[in-house]
Image (cartoon, rainbow, N blue to C red):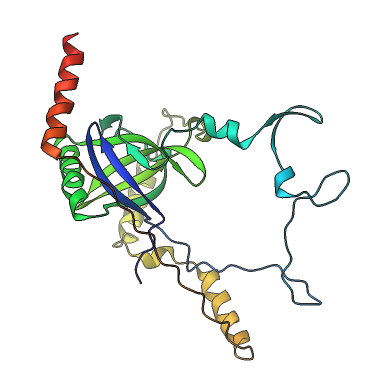
Amino acid sequence: MARQTFWKGYLKLSLVTASVSLTPATTESNKLRFHVLNRQTKNRVESRYVDSVTHKPVDDRDQVKGYPRGEDDYVILEDEEIEEVGLESTRTIDIDSFVPRGSIDWIWYDKPHFLAPEDKVGAEAFCVIREAMKANDVVGIARLVLYRRERAVLLEPRGKGIVLWTLRYGDEVREPSAEIDDKAKVDSKLLTLMKRLVKEETKDWSPTMVQDPIQKRLKSMIRGKQKSLKEAPPAKKTTPVKSTGNVINIMDALKKSLATEGGRKSR
C-alpha cells in the first residue's frame, strides 16, 4: 500500500530550493480504535463544547482561547493574534544552521518523517543538500509548522533520503529524577554472572520483539463478533493534491549564497 503524503512544501538552504514532501516514518493504522456508542440506540456519541456554568452548547464562532491568570480570570487571545507570532511561511523548511551529527541527545527526538523530493527538478537540489550534510557529518536544524504547532526540526541524511525529526520543546524534557551513585561498588562475582546471563539472552533484533499481544487478542475477539454482522461500506479514497514550484539553477544559487556569506565575513 502506497504511503500517503501529508505535507508538501519546499526545502531551502540559502538560495537553493527543492520541492519536497513529508511522509510519517511510523504508522498507527493497525492500532485498534473504538467509537463511543449509546448502548440503547447504537448511535455514536458526539463530543461537544458546553458552557461550564449554563451547560449550553457553545458554537464554534463563540469559542475563543484564554490563558488563566487567576480564578475565573483569563487573558483572551484571538486566533489571528496567535497566528501573527508564528512562522511567516508554513510551507518552507528553511535550514538556518547545522550541528555535528550525534551531538543532540536521543531524548530530544520526537517523531520521524521521510523527506523526499517531489519532482525531478527538485531532486538535484535535494541530493546536493543531502550529500553536503553527509560530507560534513552534520545535521540541519530548521523550524516548521506541523500538527498545528511550530516546531524545531532536525534533518538527518539517511541512505538516499533525509529523515526529518520533530524535536521536543525545551520545557518538555525533564532533568533526571535521581542521581546515580557513581562510587557504588559492584561485586565482581555478581558482575561475572550477570554478564554471562546477558550474553545468553542476546539475540538479533527483530520487529517481532515489539509486537502488541493485547492488540492481537482484541482483533481475534472482534473477528469472532463480526461473523454475525454486515460488512461496512469501504471508505472513499481521496485524490492527493499535486504541488508545483519553480526551482532556480543550483550552481547559480550556490555561488550567490557563498558570495553573500563572504561579503558578510569581510565586514
